[in-house]
Image (cartoon, rainbow, N blue to C red):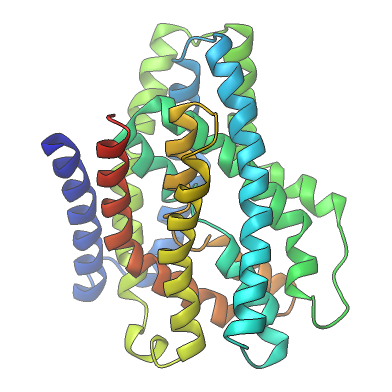
Length: 316
């Protein structure tokens, strides 16, 4: 347990350094984009490739793969239904045109940009592999159902296969699929290439936490929390969803690692891509960005609590 606490503390101390970098102007805010590109295009794909291909394929891995895909699909379907009920029936968010943005922000998770490095640092490559599969489910959900959800009150939005395929043509997703194929085929990288790729992938954890801290430094949290619907949606997402997922998943006859991956994924904040998708659909992308910022801030508390609970409860 002490080791887990130490790992968590180190991760979030790095985030605090990123916040300090932003506030002191050591690195200009407009430079964040280039760090994000470095993460998404280079270091994260390298981390994925090494983490997955270093595993050995066996029947348990095949079973866990199927289980996490099924759980991932059910997770996003259930999150949508719950988000719709809470935002429309309970919170009655307004204006009505923003309902889809609230639901998308409620039902998505940042299980890639934040999820991969934190999962790798705390739980290791076995559960990171399952988180990668969960992230593939997220991508399918966001770019197939996303346009419908964002436009649900305007009668717009249509399934766009071309855009879905274009979204999948990014280094992280492509390397995820290639890595899984290599795992199932029993293929491994040559030692020299593996060592080089692994060194690049090792940059992901510290760099991603620095970037998250820098992004939080740009957020006007004081103004954000004055929006009661935004605050309520963010709190319900970060507190209620992980609890409900645990209560449901804990009793399912599935592998322990799958349970941990699915429950831990639920503890992550709103996916960063939600804001970009809202902008593409000409919706309130600023609202999406504000929910991302607030849920990310709340996750500074929720993620360590979830990690400690899961490691203790499941004896990891």
